[in-house]
Image (tube, rainbow, N blue to C red):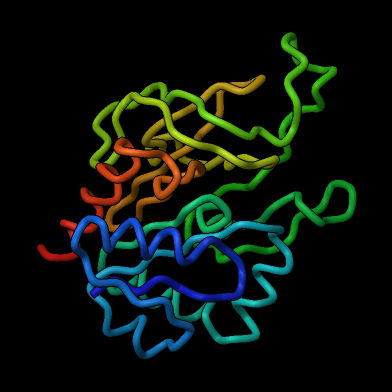
Length: 208
């Protein structure tokens, strides 16, 4: 069984529906014990960084997520769920500061450059399909088009954890893999057959 962490932010039903289409049992839960007992854990997310961290802490789910990662079971962060794994984010912080994250992956979450500073004048947020680049040795990703909705991107301290990059004004990390941790800035559950294939690869690892 796969636990989908419910901290009141995210398209939880879409993730569960995608797993059901792949014939994997999943439960949407805010119960730390269910998360602890699950074979794999998914931390989805849509919204702002600071309220998400506040919700996690208020429900005691920050510790539940850290324990799930430490247990070695397969763990997947999606979109905001990827960003929350980092040390901190510029989103919602005072100038030059950061809102504290879960601190599981060393690095920061940064805002895309202003459109006028890029040679293409791209709008922020990035909304729509984009292709994956620099996919080398990834256990989940392949070079294909996937769906993004975000204004901030992850910048890990260790480049070895980067599983894929994308380009939107800049080339940035859009997926990480480290031991049992997998995370994508894009939404596999909204990325058609490519996204389902990624979720299937993750889900199969929960049965190993």
